[in-house]
Image (cartoon, rainbow, N blue to C red; front, side):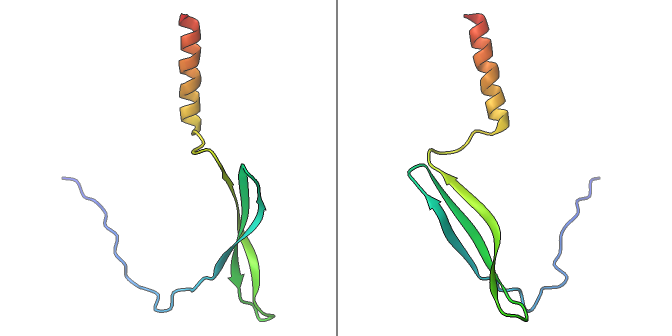
Length: 83
């Protein structure tokens, strides 16, 4: 007999945090676009924008993962050896 664990919410925050975010474009050319993702932080001295992420978008589709690259190298190496 197998038993599986289940998750249950036992307390829900009645006042969930409200976050204000903005994206600020830093650089944009025909190949890449760079953005800073910022979040508004409130302090006793006043609110300010803090950078939470730096995002770079590249044109041309997905970047292959390391496992896909390794598989491609093995296939090319095998093809070269056989030929």
